[in-house]
Length: 101
Image (cartoon, rainbow, N blue to C red; front, side, top):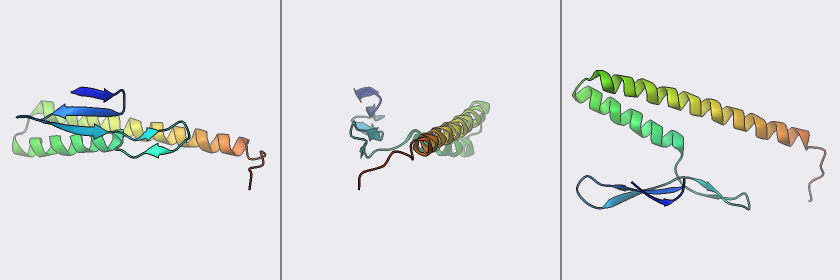
């Protein structure tokens, strides 16, 4: 793995040769976003991959990995919910500020 841009862009080495790039969504200073994938999508891909491997050849390690990845997915959902509630609370608390038309 090569980190191209810290926390945002990664090049992953293919098994034989070459690389594949993963780019995460990036919030800009002007509050716009550069499109990319999410942590949740990457975790979902890994869960599906380990289910596939588990069907081919059962292992207790794969079963544990699936459980842990599902726990990570649950925690990410809780984190997202908390962040969303904080934004809503902030907007509610600042609703008295008149926005320009």
